[in-house]
Image 1 (cartoon, helix red, strand yellow):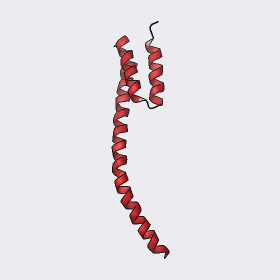
Image 2: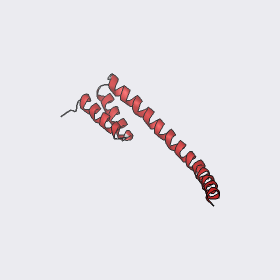
Image 3: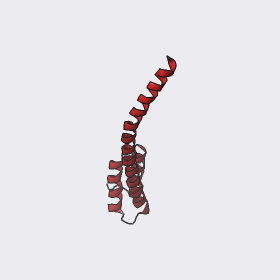
Length: 85
């Protein structure tokens, strides 16, 4: 039985909600193979691509902040220690 584009896109939507972006992108590509002109399949592909970029950027930002946060926390601990003695 041939799967419908509608059914595939429903699965894509759920995969995006579950943050399974690689799998969602593969499914969106499958939908486009079946119906190359389907605007929803193209829209999902664009959305997933943007979400992946945002996720990577957020991950880099978090790693950078961790380095700064450690120093800031150490400085705060020293300041707090001085004030309580």
